[in-house]
Image 1 (tube, rainbow, N blue to C red):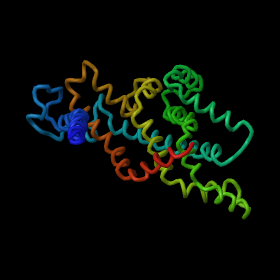
Image 2 (cartoon, rainbow, N blue to C red):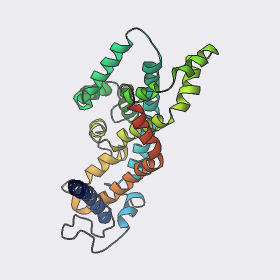
Image 3 (cartoon, rainbow, N blue to C red):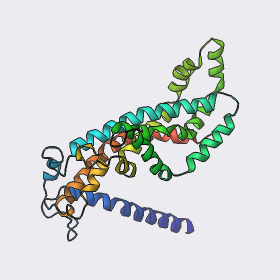
Amino acid sequence: MKKTVGFVVRHLVLTLLVVIWLVPILWLVVTSFSAYKGINTAHFFPEKWSLDNYKVLFLQPDSVVQYGAWFKNTLLIAIFTCIVSTSFVLMVSYTMSCLRFKGRKGLMSFGIVLNMFPGVLSMIAVYFVMKSLGLTNSHLGMIIVYSAGSGLGYLITKGFMDTISTSLREAAWLEGASEATIFFRIIIPLSQPIIVYTIINSFLVPWGDFVLAKLMLNSGIATDWTIAIGLFNMLGKSLINKYFSIFCAGGVIVSIPISALFVLMQKFYVEGVTGGSVKG
């Protein structure tokens, strides 16, 4: 009896949490198809349906909505950040996992402690450094800032590489292979799950970031913004009653690429997380 009651209670709680999580998403989706442009709290589902909001995003841009440019900017920043960050993480992880050198443990500990501090604490200092270099209001500057500290997130990837047998590397050394050969021909092929995990995490940071993007891209030129800044701008007091449904449509579109990426890479993502938690 106790097991049955516990089973029912757990599933009721889980069902409640699912409803709480899904209802706002469902409201965002159905509102994106509304013919009414402002916030309609009288009805959950729109009284009139329309695709006009999606047309405005890509086919009918105006002085407020430059979604095509925002999407392109965000995608380029995310792709290049993903490439650079993933490369940094893999190289640092290989160094900490497979190489032995003086000060290695101390450097690892320092990296872990440094990574515990929230990045927001250093944003003002980072902004003034980038401003002195002329890299504010620059997509290159955004990529540099997003990628610069990525190597500190090596711990999970290192844990995964720790599970790869050292005998494989030793055999390669005996055959005269260099560290670069071992890295690219042995470690990388065996680390596909954690590489996928790293790629997704590296892509997510710039794709959904608002705070740093708002701080760095402050010129007021709408075509230079990322999606997060552009969507936030639609929620201004003078614009929300005209652009809220368009904002919802933009929110739906921005979720599609990363949702598709998660679905396609889910198997590798889970393997990467669980594999990296074995050691490290």
